[in-house]
Length: 492
Image (tube, rainbow, N blue to C red; front, side, top):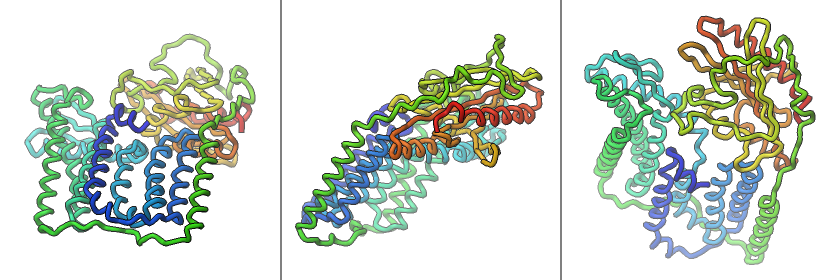
């Protein structure tokens, strides 16, 4: 899974370099490491290794790949403690921790960083264009030129470059700089360089577009421009490193050992702890490897779902369909164009796709996709869920005495506005976040042996000039009615 992410994802493509750099960091200390006598530490090593194996088991049972991948580093740390001791771990802690940067576990962090980074990059670009005399207007994530408007997409936010540059700055600081302040300064400069260089790249696209030499589409083919600016960023970073090296002089760097020497236990106790760890690992393996979740069926078939919900009636008349449903297209989630132009939820075991219509002629689409169990390649949220979550804002509803939060996505288009409400139902628990849904699924997998759940989407169109607030109010009322109906069909 890790190597696949490095090969297929533009975000984590630097992972191969992280692995090589980590190995190099260990190699540079190899002579010193060989001089350290092994001092096995079962007291700390066993719990740490068991924690890593437990994360692997939980991640496997709940289909949480991030936990499975992070468990590798924790298990390695436990292995070093068990067989070599805390002094050895103190010497190799940075190469081990550095591996975490290369693991594809940062989707949530990246998703949080992208929106403010889009705005920051657009602002940098607008300021640069203004400085070179090009009339420009900065509007949040847009850079408005006299002849076109450029929008900074999430993938153009600079976060990918930020991770790559920081991944290079950290080992350079660790190897070459001898104090914490200098290291912190270099990493801070790396962050600045990443955002400034991305702003320069966007400004370059705008400069060329202003003079009719480019379309100005930041999503288009501008690989050469990106490579040139990225190279400039790395040159600036290593220039900063050179200055810091000169400021600190030629003092030899000494390794920092952050843990005391290993505590000694009687050999008999160490043997018992190691035997207990082995048995625990085997037990977790017996649980995790053959784990097969129960097949939890619906209480009632979706074919019996009401054709009338409050003042909404099932619409069987053919009508114009502006977009596919429940497909998540790139335009809806303001995403960088994908190969197919759309994202789909994985095929569920039971589903319902319907269109309802009220007396005023408004139409609303309903989708319920229920998984009796989940496994690799057949999961509740997937890429479509992550894409929705990245651009959604919360909407809070009161259903009876409960307050429930749903996700709301809005896409303004030239002739209409498109809205989507969505949520996940995990055995009666309603959440709007795919990661929270994963957490509940993990709990159900461990305590009840089940990974069932459903995703629900409600979509509607608001024609130009129509009252968007009124349409949203009607859709929220429809969502409340659906929420009240679901317990009749969904397991709890």
